[in-house]
Amino acid sequence: MKSKKILDKIESGELTAQDAFQKLYPITKTKPGKRATFIKMNIQVPDESKGVNTFLRILFALPIPMVFARLGLRLGKRFAKLEDEDIDFDQLLHMLKYSKNTRIHVDSNDAEVDIKII
Image (cartoon, rainbow, N blue to C red; front, side, top):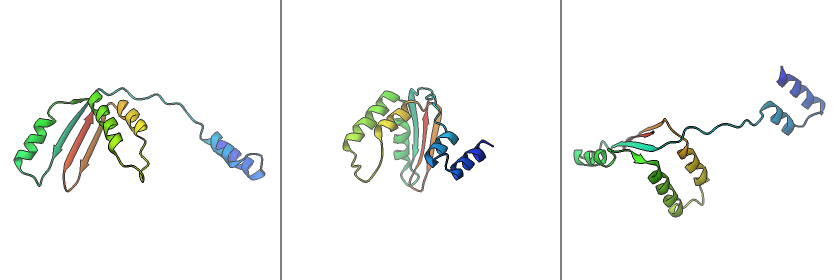
């Protein structure tokens, strides 16, 4: 019923569209998620030999501390050519820091990547 009253006020000219939007969708503060400590990766490349997949399994056998993952992202930011892209690395670092219990699974023709943030 609240939205109908706000729409009626817009129609009569008592309220602007911007003010109506702010009343309909107020900004709420959210708490950040739990702080992540490690990243566990599993990479399999089906077109490569068994040795390559074994090497990748051994390389990522232990979880990577989040400190090293964030450091790698900061170093990658320096070398990335982002004239056309709108990637905010600071926001990405913040999301990575507070993303505990997240799982990303990418399955493509070239590789299968499974990332768990713990």
